[in-house]
Image (cartoon, rainbow, N blue to C red):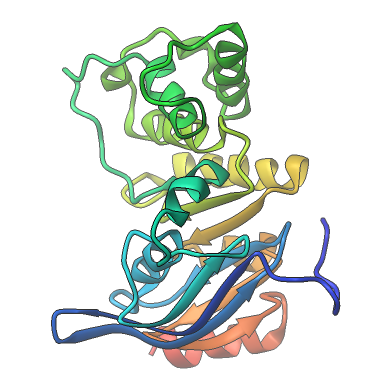
Length: 249
């Protein structure tokens, strides 16, 4: 794993970020830098603003105040997001696909290529090879021609992870990738995410309630309760203390 150095520059910068829904402030005064190759786990109680923070980073929500930069580009700048979207993968919170949804697994994974190749271009042999490789990483290559609606919820989530990595992104954002899944399936998915980071050094930003996984596997934890209340090495004793004091009270 590549760790940040004192002279390295962050690839994600949030400065005094405030996000509000109508008159309700969701997160405030968030200052956060994330560096290349980091595996960052974002945790916090329900309603603490974890998903809002992630959405503000990727430009899905515009801050009321403050600035967000990804790879040196400010996400609020007109036109900047179009060029940035091909550089990151994003997996929203899990939603099970209807059984009658006609798309095949390979078609869903292939959607992750459109930000780079364009919406209306047919996939070529190289694109198909990328799709197969992404499915191999998530252990689903045998289902390439199966309708996604015929897969289990855990398998569908693996397909979405494959879609997020098929474009070889610089950053992968994951929002509660194992919510609503049973323990065994959730653990397998988290192991795959860890494998992706270990084998590729891809920068991963993970929102998760799985404190044990963050503690054992992430290079840095960010604890949020509408603002950043702590960040650092999750293996430090202070991480346990902040979890017990703020999130388990």
